[in-house]
Length: 263
Image 1 (cartoon, one colour):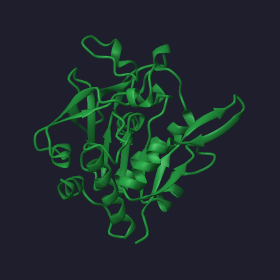
Image 2: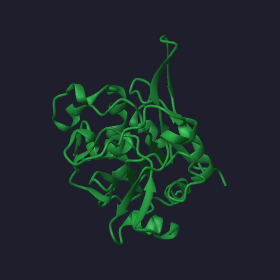
Image 3: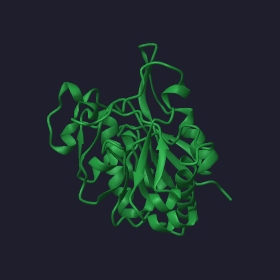
């Protein structure tokens, strides 16, 4: 059977201070191929190169990857500050309408870290520019030093709602995750259901209420060694199942349907 084509949203980078490119981490490619069973397709996040309509016709699912630039606060009605960090307006111009189109059509979509934040903003939510500055919150940012293994190490528990999609998907109320983000959900969009929290109350797992297809996102980075991680495997496996269903012409797989089959 032909593998479903999974669009992996790329980030803009400059090599040697002069050579621009759009790329993604190998860990995203490996998670899509090894666990989701898809064919990875790197998507340049720039509306001068691709359109949402073309992507919807081409791909069987999308992974919204992490990235250093943040969603511009103009998309949730706030003015930018120094705390908001760097921006990538071209990526915003692709991902935010893409989220809404996928949710409406039922085309599978999985948000990771920045992708988690993009899904909330696309559905009408807002973000805190810097979680660690809030009273009672922890520092969720990536450790500045150390090896990749140390930076992506499991650092805190995520607790899921009893009987929710993530509880059934993971087969557990609590899991251990890494954490490498500065921003987080301030106000969830009207259809954004928060199902997982870190010990300090930070939102960590969401689904889109009423979405006809797979529409999940997590604030951590499950793509890191996804084939070996008991939390990452069911997440990417369920996403891959939904993408195969779509690729075969069978339409959307509901969130709860995908979760129950993967539990």
